[in-house]
Amino acid sequence: MTHLTYIIAAYGLFVVVAVWFSATAWARMARARRRLAAIDPRASR
Image: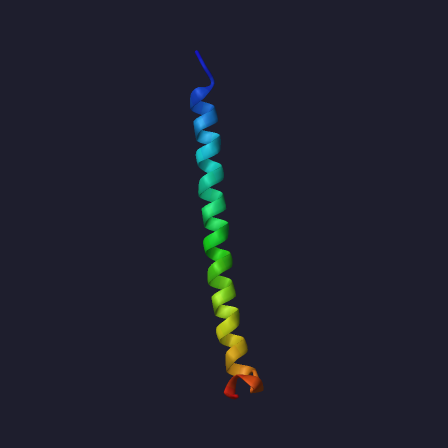
């Protein structure tokens, strides 16, 4: 019996978590930029 199943699951979980963190960070940054553009007086220049 090998540990290949565990290793594949661990790498798969890492990829899923990394993609999830990246997607949520991107969404939060986009939301923050929109909020900043709404209140920034320099945005109208």
